[in-house]
Length: 440
Ligand code: SF4
Image 1 (cartoon, rainbow, N blue to C red):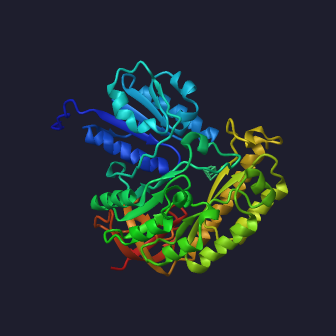
Image 2: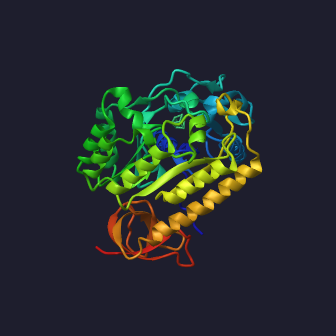
Image 3: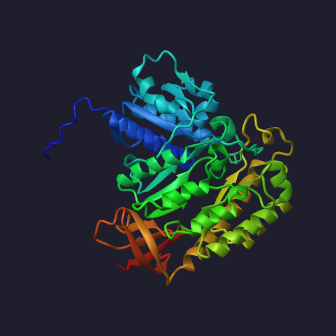
């Protein structure tokens, strides 16, 4: 076979990998763009590269160990390439990471944006951690191939949830002023994105930082002509005000999909976790959301096996999730994080018990999501198509965040269509997939 593809001489290659939350993904998007602007070609992680960049997470010890495996993988793929480890885990455990074979740079949560400068410098110093955190705006770029753009509007957190290490890793809450957020959004829209997802660590605290209100920002975003869909990232239950719900309900561009962390359905555990709501308050909020948005998809984070969690307290969580119209479960085993209040608590739960509780809730969550999807068969909805799947069908998400596949020869990427939801769970597909037909 003739090989007529001449390698581009001197074009450097960068491989990026992101762990953790949407916020991290949006930040990697910006950093990827920075590499492209400097002439780098983006390759898949694990391929030979001049630079392997890992944007880490430290929410659980599982995330930490995945990061260490990725470092080994990157070094194996490119023994001569540079391995940069950045973000939350880098901020919290820089010493250990810097001693790993192959690691060239360890950059904390603020320093990761200066990766280009550090790569150009003589690197006698491997670790760069800045404890005084600064806000760096971030937004997904095309480099990641997504059709939904993640727009970062807030970072850090002033809460003191007893299990959480994020405030230590990302610092105190700060937000991007509305003017800049709108400019960033316009830039994304000019790149062709139709859907924006607002991200941050605790976006409901947006208004506390700037004096400007989150509802004002949402209102102005919804007013942008090129924006077709607006989705909200995770929002703490105590911050989801009536005013915000009114703003969302004011426009069909707002997608009826919420992510409202629960963590536990037991008041004693919620108190020990130092969450800012009770079970009753959470219940009322969900009822209010559903009364405003009857078709809403609602996601909730849940932690199983918090120190001291009894079987009965776990059952309280299970029963609450059964009672409420929560459709997307995000279930995690409690993971002890150094220097948190919960790590110092007594009665840590055995690994096997946590695992069982996680499995129970995950299976239940899958069943609820299936029922939610099945209930939509026979209706129609708008879908933004993202990619062709392994069966050659186009896949995208409904407004309330259920995956849909349609058969089409056309290129549907980044197109919004009205879709009739015909079927569900045909044997060839994964079970949370609706099968649809394009109506227009
Ligand atoms: S709200 Fe609580 S769980 Fe969420 S980042 Fe802040 S401290 Fe962590």
